[in-house]
Image 1 (cartoon, one colour):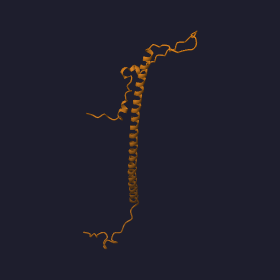
Image 2 (tube, one colour):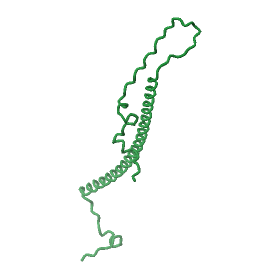
Image 3 (tube, helix red, strand yellow):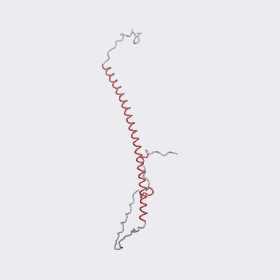
Image 4 (cartoon, helix red, strand yellow):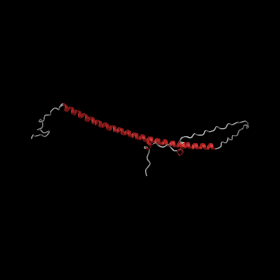
Length: 157
């Protein structure tokens, strides 16, 4: 049985002569090294890309919440405006139903041939589609389903 000396001992020095590697082995080692570096680079790029996408997703969530808040405020303003329109229409109908009496003006001129023209009739308001909706006349329009996702959910009992 051949005797093997321990690496680094005085007997092992000079006993093994390093041989030159073949060109194919040298090229294969170079290719494997380059592939390893490319793999680590791809991993680093993937991590950076994932962080960038996470930041973009957070920005989109924040803007989605802002958009939902703006939409809810716009619906509240619309409901208030519709209520005001209903109130003004009822007030206008009440004023139109009252008899119009000519104003009592004291004049210093003799009551001669003063002719007055009657006031122009007030045109009747056209009924809007919102007013003809019946019980939904003052209610805000329904929230589309794709925006309901962004609104806070009511607590469940």
